[in-house]
Image (cartoon, rainbow, N blue to C red; front, side, top):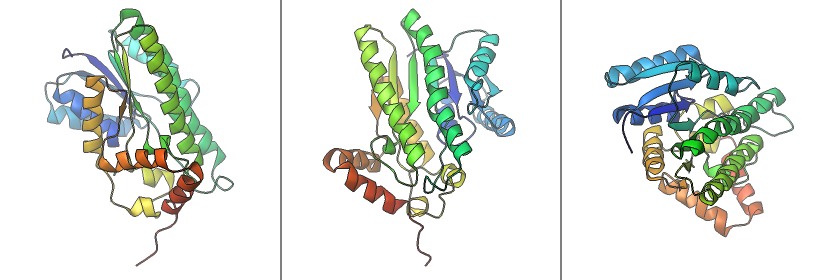
Length: 266
């Protein structure tokens, strides 16, 4: 793939999104970074510029939990000129707890960010990519794309949508004989602020050893460049996928529910 392409990354202020930005910066791509937290976004951009002085970058704060957010981001990117060659839909968050007890407004926000905004941005940019027969999209799924996840019911359902949606589009692109590719990155539990935001820090999975955002991002980056349909970035992720094939959903839901229980104090 030619260097100096323009990459739009949502959720770029921290975690996997930030590490993906570092991967692209390392190889000389122009970055457009976006996140809701303007201060955190600017700090992330400064870190990347400090590490990669040659990088061309800009940042656009956007709230993808709102109906207007995706279009506002698209319009702001258009105002900068040029085209987006690679779209990375990384933005996302979760909420932990029994569905009858969790915050409805937060969960509506989760659906907006993880599903509606991802779909909206994919619609806008995929049309342009198909028209010029060039472009790549990386979608952030999860191992729970394959697994029912009690106490994270809404989050897991949004990630199931990402997988189903993206795999359907992959087939449509084949039918159109398009060179555009869509890759779904499905990481396991990763050492980011996800568990803090979700209120799941004290659960068994929250206290467990996790993948690093660097290794997840590197695997996703390589898979995207290779045009892979799906990336399972760690051995643990591959085992999660294998369990989804061999065990019934009822058993998987029981196993996942155990992981979301509070960790016993030692």
